[in-house]
Image 1 (tube, rainbow, N blue to C red):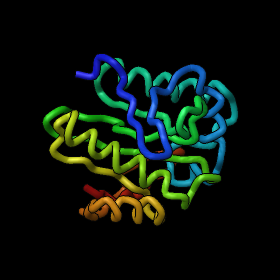
Image 2: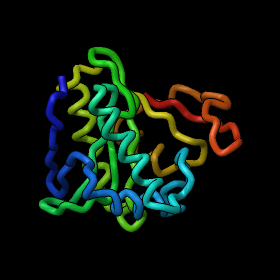
Image 3: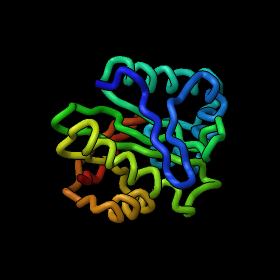
Image 4: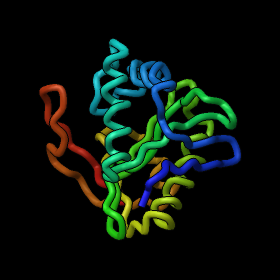
Length: 173
């Protein structure tokens, strides 16, 4: 299972493997405070911050524990966001996450990518359940998940500990 990284194509996008060539793309994405506002990452200050995340994405795939695609416009090597399963157990469940540069918000791009990744999870990974943990106040992510028929299951009280604080998360599946 997942010996080679799968590429997914949509009408406007290519979902591709994130490589060392995308290091500065990751840096740009995660140095934007608008993107990291509801993320458990502080805005990146150095390329090393981006390298750690890139290594984590690559190791999750290599260890067959997760898969994260880079979101790129058709036939363009630069990525403008990421999407994928932070963790998954084949024939059981997966936890999905996504992000995109704030310049591309409200253009339907994440909607397009999310549709294909959900299909991939259910049809190729044989996942039975996909869930998402959303930080309280992240209305855009909640609306996007609702468009894809995710159901709000409840509040996970003080579920995430990040940057010295505890945060409630809303569970969707």
